[in-house]
Structures are given as C-alpha cells and as structure tokens.
Amino acid sequence: MSRRSATPTTPLATGVIAGEVATLAAGAALPTEIKIAPAGTVTTRDGRSFSFDPAALAARFQAEGVDLPIDLDHAISRRSLFGERANAVGWIKGLSARPDGLYATAVEWLPEGEAALAARSHRYVSPTFHHTDTGAATWLHSVALVAAPALSMPAVADANGHIQEPFVLKAIARALGLAETADEAACLSAIATMTTGKVEKAVHDQTLATLSATTAELDALKKDTRDKKVAAVLEGALKAKKMVPAQRQQYEALCSTDAGLAQVEALLAASPANLQGSDLDTRQTPDGGGNDEEQPAMLAARAVAYRNKMAASGVEMSAAEAVAAVKGGAK
Image (cartoon, rainbow, N blue to C red; front, side):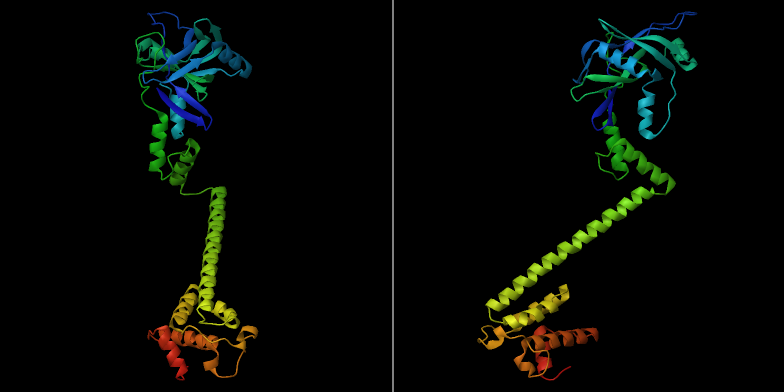
C-alpha cells in the first residue's frame, strides 16, 4: 500500500484494497459496475487497518456531484507528487452502497482503459481515498486499475502496497535541502525555484523580513549581554575600590564596544585596589584641568587612546604599559 498526506490533517491512502474486474471475453461488453471497497474494516498485509462506510461514502459522492476518475496504478495521485499529470482511463458516474460494500455504477471506459482490460494487464481495481487518523475513509479521490493483488482474496491490498509515499516525499525533501516534514507544496516550490532560477517575490520579501528581524534580535541580545557584563565589571571595581562612583559614567562610555570593554577590564586589572575614601563620591569628575594623576578615569581614557594609536602603527603594548607611557608624558 502507498500512502501520502494530501493535507496535514487529511491523509490520502492508495491501494489498500483491490477487487478483480471481470475478465473480458472476446467481443464481451465492458463492465459498467465494479466493487471498489468492502464494508467494514480491512487489515493490510503490513498490519494497518482501514474502515469503510459504503452509505456515507456514497452520500458524499452524491452531494458533491463530481465523477470519480479511473487511472492506472494510482497515477493521478502519485504523479501529482512530482507536479506531473496523469490521464483518466475511465469515469465512475455513480456509487451504490450495498450490504457487502461500495460499488461503482454507470462506469464509462475510455480507450486506454478498455485496452488495459482487454490485454488483462491490469485486472484489479483499488481506490484512493482520504481517511482520518484512525483509518476511517471519508471520501474517494479516484479508483485505479492495478496489475496484481498482494493477497489472494476478493478484497486485497495493492501489490505495490509496501511502498509508502511519505517515505518517498521525505527522501525528496532531504535531497532538496528541506526538512523531512516539508509537505508536497514546499517540495514542488523548491523544485520550481531550482528549474527557473527565480524566487517568488512573496518568498523573497518574507525571507528578508525574517532575516532583518533575526539580525535585530541578535544585536539586541548581544547589547544586553555586554551591558550586563559592563555592570558586573564596574560593580566589581567599585567593591574592590579600584574606582569611585563618580568615575563610573566615564568608564561606562569607554565600554560602549566589545573592544572598549576589554581595554577597561585590562586597565582595572592593572589598577591598585583599596583606594582611600574621598569626597569624589559626591562630586562629578571634572571635564578638564587639574593633575591627571588625580583623575584615574581621564588617565584611563588617555591610556586607551595611546594604546590604540600605537596599535595602529604596529606596536602592541599592554594596558599597564600604556598607563605608564602616558604618565611619562606620551601622547
């Protein structure tokens, strides 16, 4: 049996049962009535179960008013998986619910179907139908002429029943670089993109929007992570008395980038701990003037600038070396 998902909630099964079409004798009339499903539950060779309510299926057929196509080897349902077309070889114009099952009535055969029956190359019929998760058939999609049954009884599984379309679809999805859960529409879209070299505008716009949103989210996450780290570094420096509260704003400004944060961490690591208390706790750091020796934040800023300047000229130095250099008058 072969099965695939027509939609996420309406699985489509093919080849679950099959009944033999009456053999055509030379000059005999084509069969206009065939049994296409039994009544009740059918268990397939691999253990799966499906159930048929002939009255409900016939009622839905009557309500929809759409003739059912007959094809060869479930071609209509299977080839659509690859975006291919398959022609009908006959049409079912009526369904009848009987005690032993569901019958197709007023069957009209096209030349290709008549030829297959006359050649006896496809002697059995097998329906394709949608069903619930529990296997109850809800409506018929089509009926196929198949070559041979898998079980020797009037209602049997299709001889190709061990091939499952979801397995094939998963393999196709993997080959296209998609997730195994990708449905038929996604696979066909990917194939169309590969063959045309074009991406639909809606897909392109959605991709850009998703990328932009993801980038913004990553940037915000990165900034939040750095801000938390800056706060932890400066709080640690305050507790260790390597800086005073009045200097915090200037240190935070120096930490606005990842590189700046790394340099501030190096400067604080080289700074002595246990600074003596002063009235700087209640004053803002002066913008200029005074002795740099008495303004650690200004000294740190000059050391960072000097270190960057030397790095640009190819000279690498540590944070401590930069502090010593600017203290000695380097600019």
